[in-house]
Amino acid sequence: MVVSVSPVLAPNWRPDSWQQKPATQQPQYPDAEALQEALAQLATLPPLVTSWEVNGLKQQIARAQRGEFFVLQGGDCAESFGDCRPQVIANRLKVLLQMSLVLVHGMRKRVLRIGRFAGQYAKPRSADTETKNGVTLPSYRGDLVNAPAFTAEARIPDPQRLLEGHMRSAMTINFVRGLIDGGFADLHHPEYWDLNWVQHSPLAAEYQQRVDALGDSVRFMETLAGRPISDFSRVDFYTSHEALLLWYEQAQTRQVPRSEGWYNLSTHFPWIGMRTAEIGGAHVEYCRGIRNPMGVKVSPSMSADWVLELCRVLNPDNEPGRLTLIHRMGADKIGDHLPRLIEAVRAAGHTVLWMCDPMHGNTISTPNGLKTRPFDKIMSELEQSFAIHAACGSHLGGVHLELTGEDVTECTGGARNLSHHDLERAYKSQVDPRLNYEQALELAMKIARVAS
Ligand code: PEP
Ligand code: CO
Image 1 (cartoon, rainbow, N blue to C red):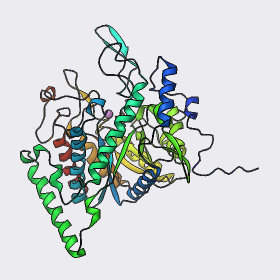
Image 2: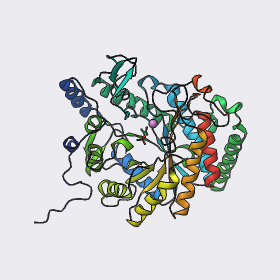
Image 3: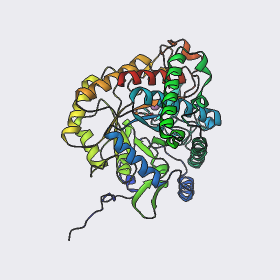
Image 4: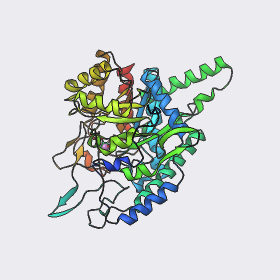
C-alpha cells in the first residue's frame, strides 16, 4: 500500500520528535517537574502570531526570492527582560523604519521588515560554563533561561522564565502592532521616527534629503491618484528569533483550524543558528516539521553537501518562501566560501532567499577584552556579498543585523569613527556588540548606494 504524505506534513515528525535527537545548547533544568509545569502552562496560552500572518510572510519572502523585495532583518543580539520598555521598543522600531525608508529610496525596491524581537531571549554560547577568579558557573544563556549576574543563584536555569519571556514577547508585539496600526509607520510622517541625533549627526543632511525626496514622491503619486494611498500609511512588521530553546518552541507549536500541518506561533520567522545547524540534530529535526518560513545561518565551515542537505531536509518540496540561507562568513572569508555555496545551491535547483549577516563573522576582542565589530569589516562583507551574488548570477535578497535604537558604543568605526577607547562609554550589550542608531543608518545609506 502506498501511503501518501501530504507535503505540509513532514513524515515521522511530531512537535516533540526533536527529543529523540542530540540537542545541543539546551540548559539543564535542575527541577524537571517545575519545567513540565511551566511548559504545560505555556502550551495553553494564546499564540503571539497567527498562521495567516505566517503564511503571508512566506508569500512575501517568495516575492523577495524573485527580487521584488529586499529583506531588512534586525534588532538586538539578545533582548533582555529589563529592556521591555516603551522607549527602547519605539526607538528600535524608529531606526528600522528609517533604515527601510533609506533602502526603499536608494534601491527602488520594496522592503520587507523583520524585527529580531518579541522573543529573541535565548542565546547559544561557545562554552557551557564561565570561570572568573577561580569560580566556575553555568554560562548565561539569555533571559529566557537564567540571569547574567555572576552568582550561582542567578545562573540556575529557571522554568518560570519561559512564561516571563512569553509575556514580555506578547507585550512587545502588542506595542509594536499598536504603534503601526495607529499610524506610526506612516510615510507621510517620517518625523515621527526622528531620534535626537538627527539634528547633529554627520549623516543628517543626507538622511533629510532622502526623506524629502520620498515625501515629494508620495505627494506626487497621491496627486496623480487623486486620493491618499493607504499603502503609504502602514507597513507590515514581522518578528523573528533564533529557535534555540526547543522546550519553549515546542510548547508554542500549534495546529490551527482549516489549515494542515503545524505552526510555531511564537514568531513569524524562526531561524536555526550556526551552532545548532547539524544534520540529524534536534534543531533541524524540530524545524523541518513546522510550516513557518525560516532561516538557517550558513558559516564558512559548512561544506556544500551540508548546505544542500539542509535545503533537502528543511524544504523537501522546494516550496517558495520557505527557506532563507543567512550567510555569516566574515569579511576575510566570504570571498573563499560564498561562491561555491551559491553555485551548489543553484546547481541542485533549490529555491532559497540569500541574506547576509555581516555581524557574526566579524567579531573581535579589544585589548581590554570587550567584544567588538569594526564598522568597515561589516560594510566590506556586505559589499562583497552584493558583488559575489551578482557575479554568480544570483542576488542578495536581504541583510540580517544586530542593532539598537539607543546611543550605545559597542561597534568601532562609522561616521564618528568610534575607537576602542570610546567603547567603554556606553557598552551595554550582555552578549554581542550592536550597531548604534547612527551606525545602523549609515549602513543603510551605504547599502542604498552599493545596491542602487
Ligand atoms: C546570532 O544571530 O545572535 C548568532 C548567535 O548567530 P550565529 O548563529 O550566526 O553565530
Ligand atoms: Co549575536
